[in-house]
Length: 230
Ligand code: A5P
Image (tube, rainbow, N blue to C red):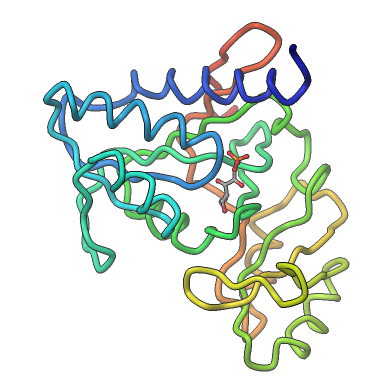
């Protein structure tokens, strides 16, 4: 039986496996978070079993649990690290390779690890490609729990903010903060929006990644495309 979800999973896997070609012979890898990167982490574990000398820096506790169970040597969370390449997923990307991330709530650690990396490679299926960020998905924002209702009010100047819930209680990040999903008017200037959101006290980090991605590997319609910034 095939269905849309299976196709999407197949595309996620194709993109993730293509990213293996971007790895150095050995070195430090930033390990992203999400359902697409899971396939990449499995491929790295296979390489480690074959004797390749990789160690990983994790962008979430979920990734740490997965990578550690598969036997990938992992570095601690404190840094500093000398990361050769980070491979991560995205919720949306545009032609300039600006990204919207954080659907899984790991945006802050993801941004720190990407910023500390020589290269960042994004892997995704074709549903993540947009003309303007904000077209399909709200922008994820990590905020402090303290005064969160006040922070939500300020975020309201930029769109419709919604506190992310997990059942009856607010969702918590690995840093024990809260998450907001901000529905915005699709933007051609995500850098300006990122700056404006950062100016609000209580905002820890945003899911807008501008100038982070060096390469997006996108799979869909029977092909795997490598997109670099236009
Ligand atoms: C995690 O918080 C996110 O930034 C993920 O990288 C992003 O949501 C992509 O996840 P999927 O690969 O599961 O779509």
